[in-house]
Length: 147
Image (cartoon, rainbow, N blue to C red; front, side, top):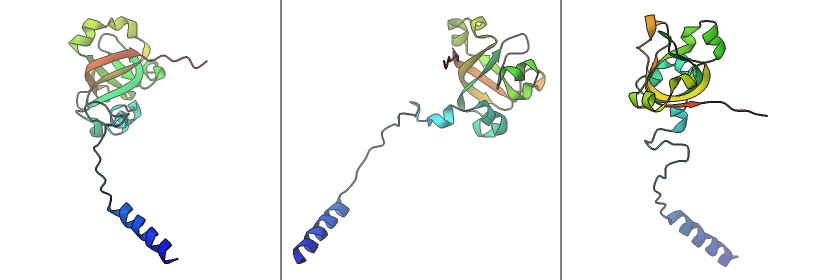
């Protein structure tokens, strides 16, 4: 019995004395810049409810895009656009590179995913929107068929 206790004690001391040195590996869900994915990829609802949290930060959102004179905006839902609920939308401003690479007409009146910098104080045409997503560098269709 003494030997069993002694062996357990040796193993316990050995386990406790091991020095764990780990380097922080980037998580699979983190962007290269080190921004956690859940802080970068956010819902438009979060922008509406807590704009101060995202002001000046790069964000990725999914929504319904409308492009028209004095009405370029991304909305939470298509119905928000059609019912004129501009507070559920954000003015959009595309980077020069994006406008040169993409034909914006192909994305009009469709659900899209965009990446840009959020500005809670720039509220678009006549201050009607919840803020602006500017310098948009990503614009892709968001169309999934779940059949």
